[in-house]
Structures are given as C-alpha cells and as structure tokens.
Image (cartoon, rainbow, N blue to C red; front, side, top):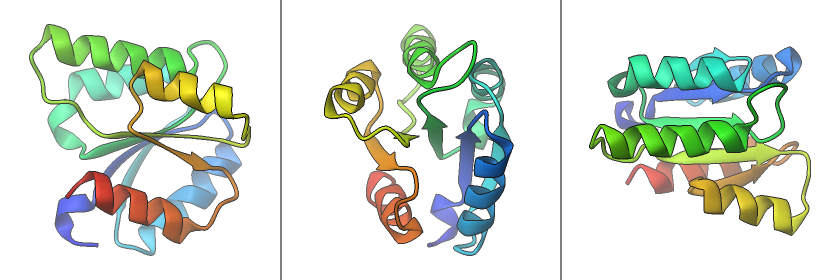
Length: 129
C-alpha cells in the first residue's frame, strides 16, 4: 500500500479488536487512529476530516452505533459540501439484512470480523483508487 492509503480512522468499542486490527493494518504501513465509540468517531472526523482517507467502523457499538455514526457523517459531508470519505463497516454479524442496512446508511463496503486482513486491505485499496 502506498502513502495514499495510509490514514485510517478506526472505530470499535472493544479495545481488543482495536488493538488487533491496528497491529494488523500497521504491518501494511497503514496509519491508524482509533476511537472506541460512535460519538468520538463523529467528533474526530468532523473536526479533522482532511486528516483521514478512509473510515473503518464497527456496526454495533454502545450509545452511538456505527450505523448512526455513518448516517451522521454523511449528513455532515452533505451540509458542508465535503467529498464523501470511503467507509467500511465491519461486524461479527453476517446477517445480510443488517449488512444491507449499513450500506444504505452510507457505508461503501463491509468486512466480516475475523476475516483475513488481506481482504480488508484489498477493500481499502479498491475504495481509494
């Protein structure tokens, strides 16, 4: 992966997931900023939207869910006339209807928790072409 793809904003309310995914992405020279809830994801992105190339967000988080955060990010982009940032949702839940709901909220793609990291990196590279 080149420098173009290196700035990830990662959201998950499970600290162990943040740690594992950050380490895996760092191996690909991807720079990860992590937050542990939907509110912080919204704050980080809305305050520094030019600092990130892509968002990777868990769907199921306490308080503000990934779906709610994605919806708010898309609303923020529209209100401020900002180009859409690519968003990859991820979840342990493989139920198709929940994945489709997330895509309708504004996610560009979905990654299954526990899937191969190469699959996620390929999705990142594809979305940032």
